[in-house]
Length: 204
Image 1 (spheres, rainbow, N blue to C red):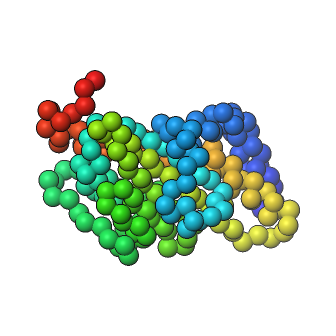
Image 2: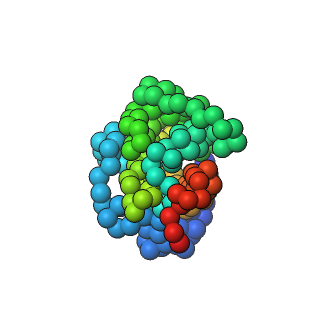
């Protein structure tokens, strides 16, 4: 067991060497401005000391009121196929998806803030919409606690497992989260803009 843990820890550290601080920062803040990264968001206090924080953003050529229904639909995991939109309210619980546990709606301030927290309180997901030049800035923030502990046979193994868990979270989960989130943000943007009358779209 100890030998396996050592091998896994070594492999994780080797992989992490290519995930430099500058690459990691780009991954965690893709699409967001420096001000958006620094700015507090409603719901930050639901997980005050996270292990990982990502803040990403996208500009949408549609007003917040037109973006909100698509945010609700796609943040809830549904595909934007039907013209009807689901409604969310504080206390609603979304079923678990491929990326994590079920999430409870904690803030639903239409059309400005939508925030979720996992039932184990290990993850908080916040979406903020603000009007900008007739369109919308949509900012998404994830706050994630340290990897959960696992049964250990010794203090030595505990340290190695912690290294493996954090390395996997950084090298695998963070880039994977970027891919999924960019796809979702782009989907919200494209759906909101495509449903807006051409006369209301912002000039290029």
